[in-house]
Length: 492
Image 1 (tube, rainbow, N blue to C red):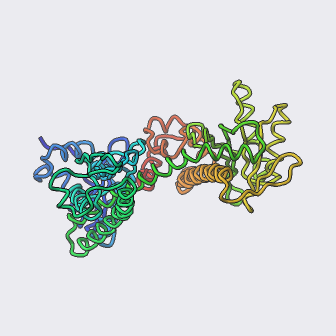
Image 2: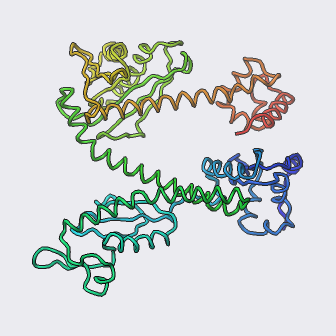
Image 3: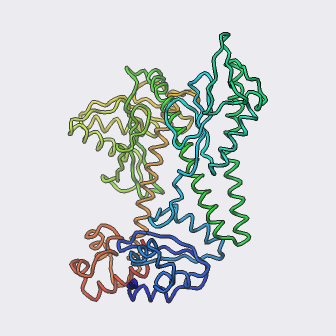
């Protein structure tokens, strides 16, 4: 049974260029459901809507085509450029009908159980907090299996299939079979001498996953240069998946390290600031603006030395217009703790202000004007990373290696990142909304009324003719012109 195609889609396909590029298929909600590359955009995209083509008879392709309601395309200069752009867009949109090459199940880790007297080297799919040391991930399961076998010969290590025996003198006999002669290493070892073998093997593993990543990238480039684009795409997918896995590995290692250091950092911070107890809950405020515009603030919250992102807050400055960090800080700190007091919620153990004495004074003032008892409060001035107190104590400069200062820096940097992200979001929204200024049928008042009614340019574009006409001053003709204008000039 042929798939019905709307006249709008057919018309859009007819106007496609015959150049290389990337196309994005969308469903009725405007969500990207598939990203593909093409040597010839017109030929490739039109093939989806021709039932006689054999590939549309495949169940997955047919299901995709039935869901397509719109598409976008991006022209590029060459097929290799299309190949790379396709991968970038798949990573960005994660469409349901693309192969998900962020999936790293095809990759293996090497697990070394350091809790045992004689650590063994084994393969694992997932990293756990079990006291073991993990290396990888590694592309090509067969390669890492072969590598482990070679490492047993090269370093004299034990794999997961061995059961050494402890001798009366405290040393170990690694093998009781012919392997004791095959591998060429001393078969009876002390715990210390075996630990040296493990250390050498671990150092070797630390470099292998990144070496293989570079090898994959080089092979991908070679295949693209020889116009073997299907093979290049396969290698590209493996590169993306391995890079994603490596990021997860680094992220896991950082999180584990932070957890390990958090308790020490809190204790050191308590001592440096003269607090009665470690500051388990810390909240930090930052103000962000660009040349006095898009002034916003952020509040981030750390618990036990780690971020609790569910408690992060963003603020628009409401009490005034312009660029005044002191007034902005007074406003947002006041709003935060007035709300907590009203809800009978506890204040944090420590409040950190990104800034110097002026910002700290403004934050403290917000408590006094509301007759609230302030919690311990400090500022962290960027210059020399100086800690500012709200009382008569002189500024404090801790060594950059101090665990308490490093915790404050992570907190401050996170608040800064969160504020800047909000600022960028508002600017992007303002830029998107400015497209209404290019539509000649709307004056400033009707533009404002439209945005107030629908909330965003995306919702105006998605509105039906009936919904548009319910807005004061928008008649049938203007509604139709506006809808056509947004369909042509604005893409989600």
